Image (cartoon, rainbow, N blue to C red; front, top):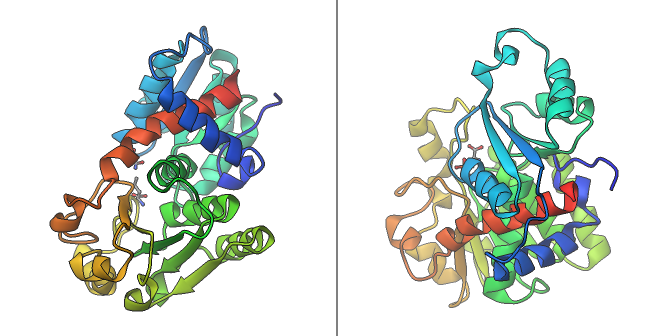
Length: 304
Ligand code: CP
Ligand code: NVA
């Protein structure tokens, strides 16, 4: 296929349902993929730390018969003055795709526009599309279907929340972004996602009231209150977000078979209590594993 990026979920809106299905298939077929990406190299470039994204992309390439190259950006010439554009053009002559983790989505877009090979976001301050794909795989395997299911995201309206809004709208989940008024998701993304949901017969809504929002939820989802690059002091974040913590009281308002999700890394005692995080309704480690399967689907689709 022609070069395509996955920087926003919307970049692969049309392919998204197929990506979810392919993730399910690749998970079932783990160990029996053959080597569809033989001879292909993925450069993984990080401006900030990572456990899941780094390792799951590396393992995904290995298990698909290809190779992954970890690059710590400060050790490149780019960390010492070479432009992002020149770096992306040069990389395009060596490797077959770039996975990039950026502080600023504007840099991510520069990489995406300058590279002549696919650029996959490993997170920026606006979105985290690969996380959202793994999340859809997780909902699909735990709940069987998307239609009529209610996902409530609690806490900071951040990159993870923004991509979840798009992903939920595309697959037909009903999503509530339950966040403080000062920390709502990106307004343009909220609007776009609502339009997609409207056309799709599902709903995207906002709430500031967790006690209302969590009623009859099928999925409760949270993320850190202080994302990488956010300079809000933890003590201040605790005050802003305390009532949005996923704890036994909020979970009791949801459906009895409600699952609890978190993209990780988690902060027990802040956005989620240890009881809930380590309790029977938590699916966070299956969710983490699903990064591997979902990213294989992305790599397979973009690199074959
Ligand atoms: N969820 C996620 O992207 O985790 P890492 O920061 O460890 O990659
Ligand atoms: N919102 C978090 C996600 C980490 C995977 C962050 O950007 O730090």
